[in-house]
Image: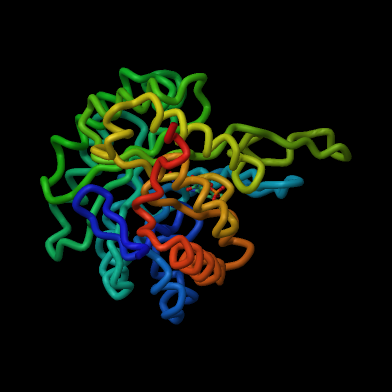
Length: 316
Ligand SMILES: Cc1cc2nc3c(=O)[nH]c(=O)nc-3n(C[C@H](O)[C@H](O)[C@H](O)COP(=O)(O)O)c2cc1C
């Protein structure tokens, strides 16, 4: 039994795409033409959508590291109107709950974007909005919203008051903080339905021949196997220390460095209900069916439902 629930959203498996690593769907012929990938997935999470189109950062935008990937894409996308008209309708054919990841430069803009998506989703395709609080707040000098709990609470509350009740809210936290339970608590106070963690960790790489940073943006976000212990630790901390997470009233979605079914089991045992997989899929898009089979076999041998394993690592 691999079925799990993120509040009222039923996922047939706990496996989800990670925002930014599977596009907005319509460029994803791999997914469209692969029933095995679609049947392994529990939900589709889109790349970040912003109110207006964004060109993204200058090149280079991706640098490989020893055990991960640095990216500074800069949220390139065609904007909310284009997404709603040209991309969202195609996602319906996946037959999966659709989670739309959103970013903005100010709290007001988060509200406008969320209400635009909610008001224009006449076919009710969107199951949840995932708020990316790792983006910079231009009104506060470009510091990421997610590092300031007051801002996190305000954004979540703004989004909550801007959308239809049927759409759930997931808040995606940045790991670039000292204590992850502080922004997690703020998001819960703001009314989030679930928490996703982690986004990428800030990092850089230097080209020793040009003597300059390799990324056009100078710094970027680190993802992939290198960050798994950090993501796992942050899920563990939230499950351990936040009663609403421990009781699963606010379910946790684990991300960071997952590339094998065993990684998924670790995240679930640490406290996650579902997981997102990003960088590893860029290397191997067929990863989802492989992870699904390993997970299914493990659960069958254990003779339990996967949901029974959530947080089991905390048992005395
Ligand atoms: C190329 C790339 C683009 C990303 N774009 C977004 C994005 O638009 N919104 C977001 O919330 N996270 C974004 N992320 C972060 C991922 O969703 C995920 O949280 C992170 O990469 C950790 O998971 P992983 O190690 O499995 O990749 C991006 C990551 C990568 C590698």
